[in-house]
Structure formats: C-alpha cells, structure tokens
Length: 109
Length: 118
Image (tube, rainbow over all chains, first blue to last red; front, side, top):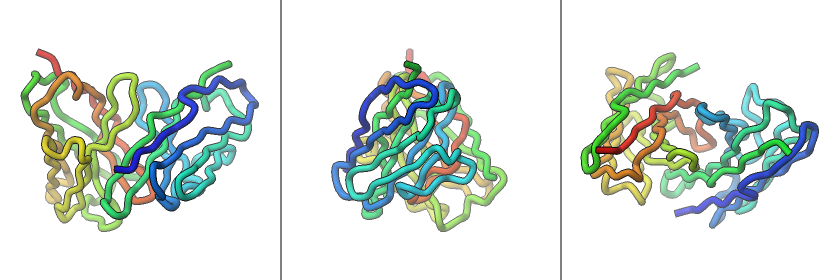
C-alpha cells in the first residue's frame, strides 16, 4: 500500500497570506497526485490533477508542484472562501488503487 | 456534466450488511477511461477509498476492506452499488460515490451519512 502523509495538520493564516501545504508519498508515484478542497458538509472538489495541472474552473491562485514522493499545494494569496480542508490523493498504476492523505485544515489566524 | 446520487439506508445495525446504490445521470457509465468508485469519510476524519469498478465489471478494492466489500455495476440502469458486510461502529461515515480517473476524482455525489448502531 502507498501511504500519503500531509503536513501540517492545521495551518492558521490570514487573508492575503501565501500558504503552502505538503503531501508525501511512501513510495514513488510519479505525478499521479491530485489535490482537493473540502468545505464543511460538502463533497471534495478537484483543484489540481497530475500534480500540477489546474482543474477547469479552479482559481489560478492555486498551484501544485512536485513529483516522485514530495508534493506541494500553494495558495498565493489566501481568500476568505479558501478556508477549508485540503486533501491529497494518489493513484497507483500497478494496482489500480487510490489512497488519500489525512487532510490539512486551513483556518483563520 | 455528470451527476451522481447515492441512495440507501441511513442507519444499519452492527454485524449487518450495508447496501448503497449510486445512480449516474448526464453521462454514460460505460466509459473506458475511468472507474466508478466509493469513498468514505468518518465524522471529523479523512477520506478513505473503498474500491472501484470499471463498466466491464473489473473491480479493485482497498486491501484493508477487501474481505468485506463487493462493488457491482448495472450498465442498463447506469448504476453501480456497494455492499459492505460485518459492520461495526467504525464503519460509521459519510459514503460518497464518485467517478475516478487515474489523474483525479472529478465528480462526486453529495454523500450519504451511514450510522452503524443498534
């Protein structure tokens, strides 16, 4: 199984801040990494796919980087609507399986 | 735009089997580029992939749940289903059905809360 570890668990930030979240894989996953935003009571929404591609309709202040085992999601200027929990997800092409990190909550400083 | 809607009981007793159905609209379930899958989220916790199925019926399951999980597909009804047996309180969660590509999960149902309690 490929384990995904996100850090930090919580980040406190203010509107306008640059925020960077990290996701690490227990083994090389290439660029099969996606990021999701989830607000309370809602289903997750895809933000970034294939590590760095912005999903259609997602704001351009979101960007993803990385490959192999270390990945980051950056919000260049935090907006009020960005307070949420962010999840990373990997796809293992050898077993056709998926797994998620435990999530990072972005809350108000 | 494809839409997914979960249906099934909100309360199930311990040791029983959970049965959920996902109805897909706005698109065909018979596509070769993606899986149809189930993902759950216990209250206050992270997301867990349960398993996926191709329209052909080929299935893939989370190794931690494989002994208890069965996912099936009915292409004639544009639906797929989840069965999870031997339930315990640890299976209490919001259950989502979703469309999964290898690059990400682009469509989700709204989720349905399933509580395991006597």
